[in-house]
Image (cartoon, rainbow, N blue to C red; front, side, top):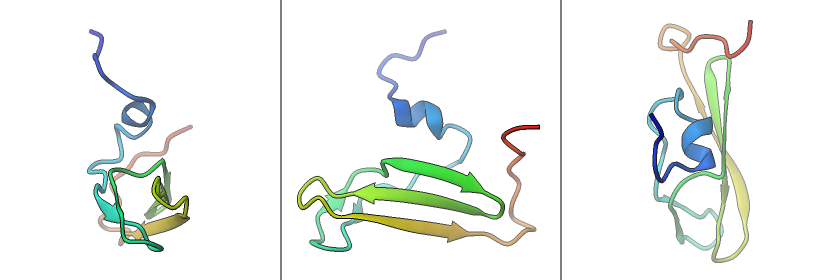
Length: 76
C-alpha cells in the first residue's frame, strides 16, 4: 500500500512516536510547524528546528528515564 502525501520526515520518524509541533522559534518566537530532523539515541530524542522566518536554527533534546525507554535498536 502506498501512502499518498507522505514526506521525507514522515518516513524518517515513523517509529519515534509523537512528533512535537508548533514549537516557537528561540530567536523570534515564530511558530515552527515541525522539526527538520529527528534523531533517536539511547534514552533521548534530539530535534533540530529551523525557523523559516528568521533562519535561526536550534536543537532541543528530550531525555527519558531508562524505564520509559522502550525503543528497539535501529541496527543490529
